[in-house]
Image 1 (cartoon, helix red, strand yellow):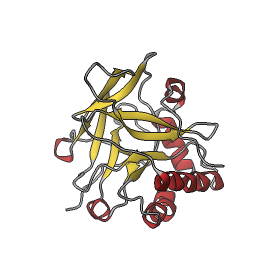
Image 2 (cartoon, one colour):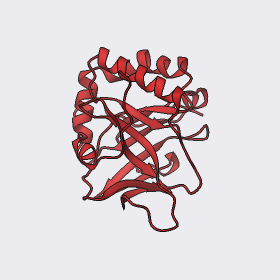
Image 3 (cartoon, one colour):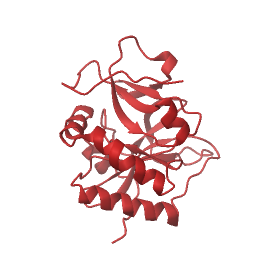
Image 4 (cartoon, one colour):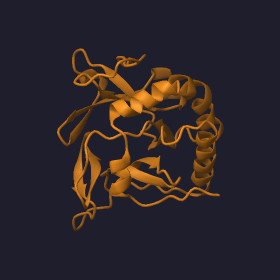
Length: 216
């Protein structure tokens, strides 16, 4: 049965695990091995390495009713679900599966004039991806994120209250402990070792965290 691509749901967003809950599940499933040995080839062989990245869905805070998390210029905050007059609809940039198996967008970005459509090729890949997740009993451990472009250099997300700020590598905090939360498999990003990480210094996970490096 084909996966249903469902609309944004605040209830689904609230069901996402915390970063440390997601990390616990990731390490219990030997997630790094899965990324390297299963998902890298899956994305590349299906021609999706410049369409999607692999994500580890989680949330740092809840959002109030009628709100969703939207990023603009590297700063992600809750916005009203309905865009302001004269503004484009925010673009989905991450998706995760519900317990029912539907795929929901969970985070967005505002970029006037940009568009992304999930067409037949993407739908076919989403079905294949979900089949692999089900076969490996991964549940909601992994999701999808929008490919950030060949010029992406990596990022570290720092959270304060209900604001996420994505820093470029040159601006990473001293002593940052990064927990990987998204992986990309295109040749230029693989070569540079680019990922998305979350700063996990305030409530560090007991194992598996590391500082991301970018290889020139």
